[in-house]
Image 1: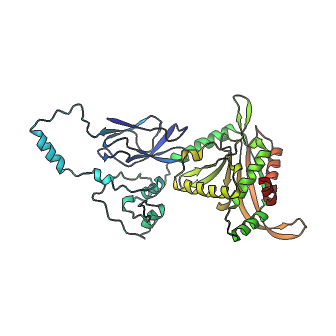
Image 2: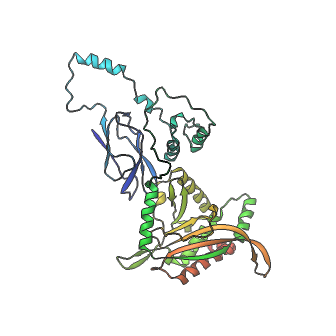
Amino acid sequence: MLEVKLHDIGEGMTEGEIAHYYVKEGDHVQTDQPLVEVQTDKMVAELPSPGAGTIKEIVVPVGETVQVGTTLLYLEGEGTKQAADPEPSEETIPAKASKQNMQPTRMQTTLNRVLATPYTRKIARDHGIDIENVRPSDPSGRVSEEDVYQFINGEQTPSEPATETKPRTQPDTIQPDEIPFRGIRKKIAEKMTKSIYTIPHVTHFDEINMTRVVELREELKASGVSVSVPSFLVKALTIALKDFPVFNAELDEENEKIILKREYHIGMASDTEDGLIVPVIHHADQKSIQQLHDEIKELTQKAKEGKLAHADLQNGTFTVSNVGPLGSTGATPIINYPETALIAFHKTRKVPIVTDNDEFAIGYMMNLSMSFDHRVADGATAVAFTNRLASFIEHPSKLMLEMI
């Protein structure tokens, strides 16, 4: 009998929530066939079967959070026998073989298992859809979230079933007036509670004239170079942090010291279907604006599809929340503990402004909200820091010079 335990999916993982079982007791499985979907604090992962055999008992129910090392289910491996099983006699062997030959080969169905990400499977489950009925548009046979939505909207007919429909567990039933408080949402709540009760927050508000960056971006776009405004903001931020290292720091209260980080790993808070995810751009100070643009785009897409690796979420030193696309004009963001500060970039809006020549013109302005740990820094330092950040954005030529 094999014990399938929750193992460490990534460095530092201590616990996980059982999100979904792909099998039920009595099912036959093959080696490496996904058995269970586990939700950690920042990602979803599938645990494969360590061998072929029969699911004898599922120990931990869906929705329960357990520690690494906990037994989730028991698997009776092929070729093993229960201790109480008697040795078959010569008379029973032919009968037993005949009976086995009459049983359907359920193992064949696992060979036709649909390829899909955990996020895509979640969409299908939430809509009560058997993902095996969804026809993949990708030549590789992988079902995408777009394929599932087309199926939901009636834009495709069910695909032909396999030789035998594999028994599947029923999707979780949620009452219309309830939302499960678990998974990433629960982890966010725990971390935010720790942050707000540990760190004395102060929020500084400011605004930045984005006109020249917007114009530069349009010029680059016209020349065939595509870069996003956030990539300019992150580059300016890393340079400003080098001038004000106290905001790229961590307070070690036990040893009574402020640790100034020498690496600049910028977390980019991303809103996903499963909650707030903060993938990290590692060594952001060493990357060009184009490289930052490409990495922000890649990490955002991976976060949306639930494909982030554990390493993508580790070792952040400062967090950015780009809520402007959602229409926000202000906030009091909570610091991503144990970091010292967090900046929220809000909506860029077209407004009348006064130019350097004291003339009226139409330009682009953006609000920002910066929350910081008042034990580590003071308000005057925060103002000086955002002024430095703004100087690079309002005069992007200075940003280019700093990169040379």
